[in-house]
Amino acid sequence: MKHIVKVFTLLFLFLTVGSTAKADEKVNVVKQGTVRGRIIDATKQTLPGASIYIEKLHAGVTSDVNGFYTFPNLEPGTYTVKVSYVGYSPVELKITIPEGRTLEKDVVMNEGVELQEVVVGGAFQGQRRAVNSQKNSLGIKNVVSADQVGKFPDSNIGDALKRISGINVQYDQGEARFGQVRGTSADMSSVTINGNRVPSAEGDTRNVQLDLIPADMIQTIEVNKVVTPDMDADAIGGSINLITKNSPYKRFISATAGTGYNWISDKAQLNLGFTYGDRFFNDKLGLILSASYQSSPSGSDDIEFVWDKDVETGELCITDYQVRQYYVTRERQSYSAALDWDINENHKLTFKGIFNNRNDWENRYRLNVKGINLEEDDNGNEYCSINNKGAVRVQTKGGTPDNRNARLERQRTMDFTLGGEHLFGKLDTKWSVNYAKASEERPNERYIDYQLKKQKFTMDLSDERKPLLTPQEGSAMYLNDDFSLKEVTEQQEDIQEKDFKFKLDFSLPLTKGKFGNHLRFGTKVVHKTKDKEIDFYEYTPLDEDGFDKASLAAAVDQNRDGYMPGKQYKAGSFISKEYLGELDLNNASL
Image (cartoon, rainbow, N blue to C red; front, side, top):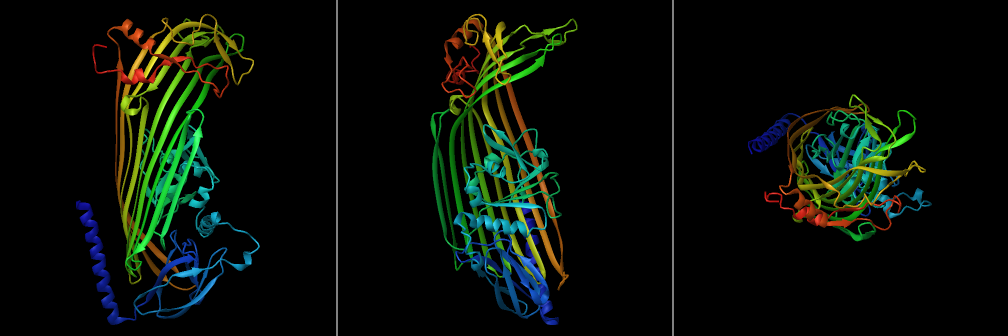
């Protein structure tokens, strides 16, 4: 709380000094004026990246991502202003700058008649704005708008990013999770929301989970492939900036609904979204609220092999053979809000906040034949010698009944920013206070593993991409009384990273005219903490025979028609997720 008091005390001092300076200038010199406003089209949609140029002064500015522009340091008088934007007819207007005051002037642009032969649908309007913003950028930047993202069936921001050139993504269960810029590792790129670094809930890396944020909650995606001096110097690969929805110029209401079906989970999917925005109190206060909900039951089938060569014959052999089935349900909830309050023509306060929650319930059934064809020499070193013998391990992954008997991974991110823009004569001042948090919880993640040692198999290597392993005797792929308990484990995980930031930026015009320039300087204070707590337990039953009997009685067949790698692969039977979830691991009598 002490830090916040200092911030507002500092702001008050600036307001006081600015007022005093204005009074002093009024006595001695003619004060210069400023024009500021917003560039919009005929439908009251904002136009970022518009060019505002005063030919008499050989100077110009561009509108920001929300369409706002500021032209400071102007001598009182009348000027001809030219506003241009790709795809729109140029606008030329005369403005009169008052002495020592700020003129508010919004500019409305109409689509250009020279493009009449090209049919441009409404779905492209936002992307046209994004391309114009990209064109006017001083750095190497890609900009993608929300409506461009909406053209594709992308459920999260990670999937939307993969459509940008120079971006690669890492997948998890068919969804893009981490983004890589220009081929660098994901932890060498920064991810920001409205320019503020997003903390990571990953335990060992600084990767940011992009699949937490639904695609319909973002207004614009900016990918800066070269870090510029006004950005944090913590990104070797580049920076991905996610801009949340900003308060509109007029009332705005949008709702979306969608569904689908996944034949592995045999369940329906659901997508819902709602956005409301308006301006109040004579357009002084702008507000936008957004909410998104996604439920996606799905699954995946997987086969994995580890290859080696026989040291004597050079023939290929397999040392590890796995058949897996995953059943996953992902649920996303996201809420965002943005406000702006125009105190007067020289002072404005803003607030932006977003909260994202993703629940990931997963059950995995894994059949693993380990140590196939591996033997030891006299020194204890393993080598590959074709004998087609290995140990069968059957593992169930789940959780407690409170978590649907599945492993729950709950990840959350939140970002809240309060800021202000103030014009004190020539000095343009911007400040912001930001709080961000990311967390990951994995309560009661459980595994139960049964094994059968030294089993003989027949290996079919006619298709090296899909080798097939079958038991020579009996049905070793199915749980029976010959199996014994390998392990029962439970793990609790809690990771939290918190950031607190304060930023103060100044911009001061030095010279005007054809070679006009600005001096920009500022400061930023960041306080970061990260905590990671993992508790791991391995259990051994007191009555192993009784425990094995009860466990094997709870075995269920997990073979499913339509197994994607091929019907020749049989997952076999596994301890049921309900039995694993209901085990009272705190009861020493088990």
